[in-house]
Structures are given as structure tokens and as C-alpha cells.
Length: 255
Ligand code: XBP
Ligand code: MG
Image 1 (spheres, rainbow, N blue to C red):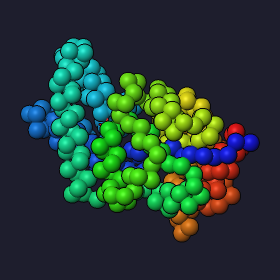
Image 2: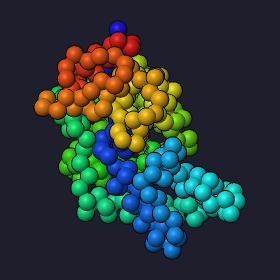
Image 3: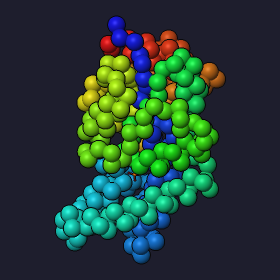
């Protein structure tokens, strides 16, 4: 049986509910700032989340919602510009608007650190967005808790491709079987499982209907002692919320 050596966290939707009131707002500000009449309401944004990566999402929107623009392949410079603006707005927003960590995240990070299980990040968003979120929610020293921040364009193919997980494992110098991933979406799950990493899914309002059959366990949140989580699918856990020990147990079952 393999020992659990590292837990790899997704960011958006997993550490915090950043999508609806964070990334979505920042995209809309970038569109308005560029004089475009595009507006992504909550529903359209839910559909667009099928595409991971902000630049890729804008490209998909152009190709599928603005058919008069033809192939968006010619628009890469505009997309890069819009996305740089969007990142700037998102970073500003994190300074002015409180985006809290999801229940159980801070506690679980602490437990894992106490047990000397290494921490890493594998995300589609940019490294600067990750650092800003961690700084805003856990304080400036917390970024050093993570042995690897695998993010954004560090790989060419974003989730659901497994590349960001392969990159993360390489940086950690660990094998997939040494690790467990925590994801919130089907694209994230495809990426982690595609790299051979056992995965716990913690769903949110945007992802609850997605297909998570490949997850070892699916919960509605990580939970806290006074706020139990619900196991939606997969292996049961022994406690009413996800602990470092639950992750070790789930990892042991799979490996
Ligand atoms: C998150 C994403 C990201 C954000 C936007 O996926 O899809 O694209 O919505 O971030 P995951 P950027 O949680 O699987 O990493 O605009 O910085 O790409
Ligand atoms: Mg996610």
C-alpha cells in the first residue's frame, strides 16, 4: 500500500467559489472596458465553464455566440489583451471584495501540514491569481505552504487534458500513486484521473450535475465539525467531514 505523500488542490471552485462573483465579474469588466457590449450573465457563464481557461473561454464564446466573427483563430491578440485586462480586474477585485475559502479548506490544509503531507496546486487560472487568492484568504506566508503551484500557461493543453497534473507531479518529483487530488469539476476530474491521480470531488452549484463517476468520493463540501458534509457518491468516509485521515483512507483504498 502506497503512503499519501501529497495532496494536489484545484483552485477555482475548490478552494473558493471564485467563478460567479470573481472571474465572471472580471470578464464583464474587461469587455466593458474594451467597449464591447458582451455580458456574461450567471447562466451563460455556467455554459461557458465547460471550457476551462479564460482565454480559451473567450475564444469559444467568439466562435459559438458571435458567429458573424467567423473563426476566432485570427483574434488571438485581442483575446490576449482582453484576458490581461480581465486578470487585472480580477486581482483588483480580490483586494476589494471578500472571496472566502470554502468550508473546511483552511482546516484541512492545517491538518495536512501537521501530518507533513505535502501541498500543491494544479489549476487552469494564472499563477498570479492563485497567489492573490491565497494571500487574501490565508495571509502572505501561506503561499510557501505549497511545494508546487502548477498554473495556467505553464502547460499548453489545459484541463481536461492531464498535462497540468503531469507537470505538477514532475515538479514534486512524485508518482501519481503518491498523491490525491481535490477537484470541483468534470474537466478537473478528467485531468487528474487522466494523470492517474486518485481524486475526491467537492461539488458546487455550477458543477453539481456533472459526471463524476471516476472520482473515489464526491461530497458537497469538505465540511467542518459543526457543518457536516454529504457524501453524494463513491466511497463512504468515517467522519462527518473530510479530514487528513479521510484523505489517507480514500488514497489507501485506491492504491
Ligand atoms: C478554472 C477555470 C479558469 C477560471 C478563469 O478551472 O476554468 O479558467 O475560470 O481563470 P480550474 P483564467 O478550477 O479547473 O482550474 O481567466 O485566469 O484562465
Ligand atoms: Mg475548478
